[in-house]
Length: 182
Image (cartoon, rainbow, N blue to C red; front, side, top):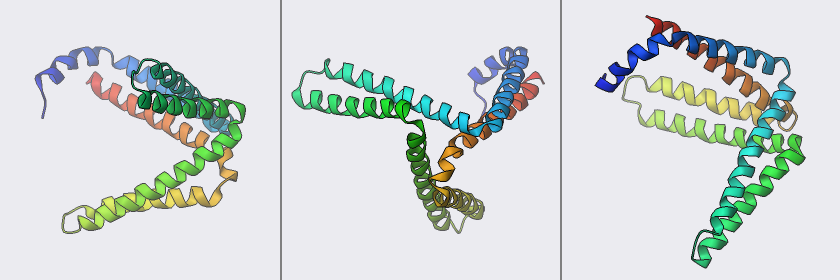
């Protein structure tokens, strides 16, 4: 369903189609660089996660001094300390942090894949349930493959996922820009 606000944005988007294409090309180039050195891309990913956790930890610690009740102060300080320590840990030992993040990703994929398969079988009378099951199976197998290769694959798997994501987002933006030109 198209809303009036969607229609109002179309002329401005179609005028800017070239920016979407340019950003898409830049992302694809970044993805190519990441594919060229997945170890460096993994380290960059870990530093990014570490920086976000460090910032989040400092903000949680600052929040601890803004709350009034003692229980809340303790919670915010504990939470902020955990985030801060994890962020510092990512900077001090990015390879070990990448191993931890890789295992967490494998577990998350295994759980998500399992739930998608279970959901698909519960939808079985509906048309298309098999596609949901297939998607869940791919997710489950990806998680199992990552877990089976751990910890060795933790040197490159995060970088590989970053490279794939950059290329896919680049392709999506190029397609959007070309279609928006319309």
